[in-house]
Length: 277
Image (cartoon, rainbow, N blue to C red; front, side, top):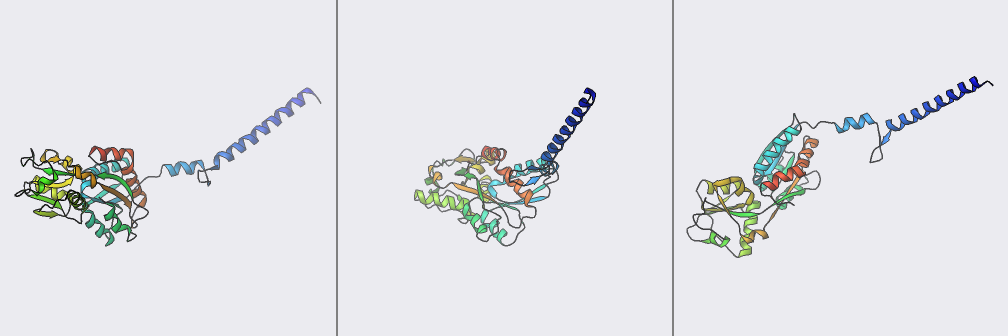
């Protein structure tokens, strides 16, 4: 065999070997295994990661979350163009009753585990609720604190117009727990159905003081002045959030919950005065 023929055959064999290696490489990349063991193509994986979140998310949330959730709703819409977040803010017990009564909602954020339990007991949530923040009470007084309120005991003072949340509402239940711990029984001029209503009584100068959340005092700015009291530490409320069973677009609803629980969402909430869970 001539040197020329041997060289030609060697080159042909090398070329065939390279072709086999290329084919094997192509098969491997086209059928890579995912983390759960299933096989998926590279193009399919890319399509999955770029899947858009669309639709409207309806969130029922405790009144004390109004400012922070409104801000997070706007952020969510910016992150996911074409989506819309609508809110129904109110007393957690009223919202829970609406949900169990069939009101259309995708996400429920309550101001206490007790009010969330109303919904979970009816199996109206898709999965277990998760605590995402905590909140503590504070006394809201008129600007400058003209009545010199410095403690929870001062709320029992004669002639002082005090407002509390209704005992069925989380802020009212927490206030009652703190008052009981202090052995106090004030006589409020009214019981309000949510924390914002209680706060507004002071803002409108229809009351001298109200027991509300620290976050609400902070949100009101200079319209009220806050007075801390030690008994509040015994009545801190956990705030749970849950995806509802009848959510119309569970993917978008889950994405909103993820934003609330993310580092970005937590930053917005803690800046407003909420405590980390």
